[in-house]
Amino acid sequence: MAKNRRNSEPGTGLGIRHLQCFFLFAGLSVAYALRVNLSVAIVAMTDKNATNPEFEEYEWDEKTKSFILSSFFWGYVVTQLPAGQIAHHFGAKLPMLFGVTICSFLTILTPWCAALGGWKMVCASRFVQGLCQGAMYPCTHALLSKWAPPDERGKLNTICYSGCQFGTVIMLAASGVIASSWLGWPGIYYISGGFGLVWALFWFFFGASTPSQYKAISPEEREFIENSIDEKKDDSEQLHRTPWREFFTSVPFIALIFVHSCHVWGFWTLLTEIPSYMSKILGMNIKSNALLSALPYTVMWLLSYVFCGISDVLSKKKLISLTFSRRMFNTIGLWLPAAALIGMGYATKETTNLAIGLLVVAVGVNSAVYLGYLVNHIDLSPNFAGTLMGISNGFANIMSLLGPLAVGVIVTNERDPAQWRIVFFISAGAYFAGNLLWCIFGKTKVQPWNTPQSTNRREENGYTMVDPEKPV
Image (cartoon, rainbow, N blue to C red; front, top):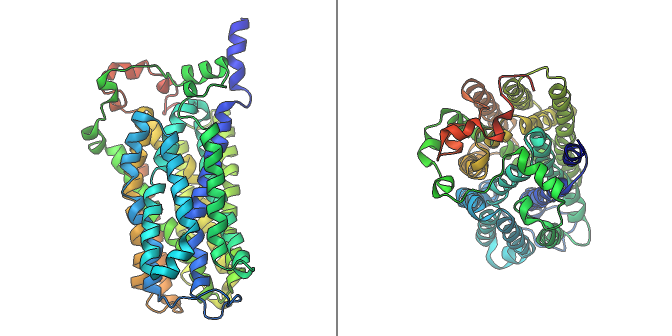
């Protein structure tokens, strides 16, 4: 009895798995700050009426700016799949470390790139930054699959990925203030890059790919984690064989790729274009623009914890099944924002408050997808979660690349509300279609190809301890 009580203690309090979760939260915060800094900085870089004329302004039209904003994703989509495979075979710690470190250095050098090579060199720098950050999502999923017990998976997943919004909020809110200060718009890059290097230093000393690689973890917590996820050593070639054919013939995984792509189209179109929309359509200056641009992501960050709490209550009371829970939260996260985007299409300067309110809904409620499709990779295959995320995020971020480019093509007159309306309608349609198809064809059961060497082992695998069709 004493032994059982001792083994249960690691599951009831804070442990090393929560420390790893905190570092993943911080790492994704830094990564998103490095991604979105250009969204506000480019407004200051091209503002002829800048409050700080000491720093050079560039005459880049909307199409050029959209080209620059999308260049990050040209590299980002390339490294998704390789990063997932590297994380699966060699561990996720080092790809994240090198990615953030190199990206941070290049961010600090961005003002010199603009001065020496204009928009082309900025695009080249952002391309390489995208290559570096391609490891973040696949590695985060790979780490969660090793560190998060099934009962804590939704909660820890939400906490980690809420760092995306936290970094976005901090960067958008601070960028306008920094651009108006003595540092000017170059300070946006210096500060965000500096924080990235600080995180990399801490991650080098305290990060670990698996519980067995963290020397300071207690034997009790390690045993608790490994037993709960059935983490057993098996060096057979078949265990490490990646079932590529099964991936791409799996209807639930194809549906997951589709919803991921649809969500990313709308999310990144808004994230990269909100500062320009607020500046040109709602007539806000760079400082208030940055602060209000951060508001929707502040709400998104806070709501992620609200949805997580609701999910915990429903789970403990066993009121709904895992499948229903995933679909319910995903529908909240995509269909409510779709309705808000349609309303935003009719906003004008005279209805600024309404436009901001709809924008808050369109972005803020998105956080429900952390309990929907975004954790579904681990549901389908804990063993290949990083690779699955690499595949789906690779396809999805082609949309990240195309979204800003599409805005550049559609919005030829950035002060024309009718052209922005088309942008919002397209994003709303993507949200609606993506969720509909995933709710019909998506699954939450561990797939047979999770353990390709033996489909029978799946029945003994610790991941199947929760039946998706029974109440959670």
